[in-house]
Amino acid sequence: MGSKEAEEFLECFRCDLGFWDACYTTKINCSVGERCYTGRGKAADTLDVKTLGCVKADGCDVETTVELFYNNTIFAMTKKCCDTPLCNSAHKLPIAALLYLTVALLTL
Image (cartoon, rainbow, N blue to C red; front, side):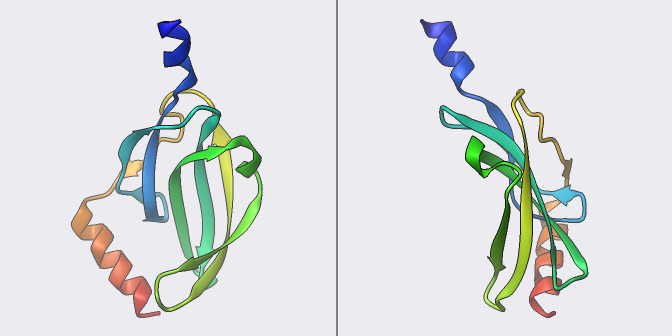
């Protein structure tokens, strides 16, 4: 029974917000029934944004509207899912660069 339980939890990368293909990532264990995802969208019609994490299967391949930060930038994002460990890999981005890009986006 122990090995079956281990198979139910999927390890994925998590990134709350990345720009282009760069994300500051950590590893997380998804809840039972969730898959890894890579979410892609475009903010302010020019900036490619990306998120990584876990999502229930019904959230896969569905376009959702996301509000970004306090300046109410709204963009559409689609989450593409996969179901093998760490299948939603991303390039790591130093935290200083991520903060710089976040500030730049806030000034749009």
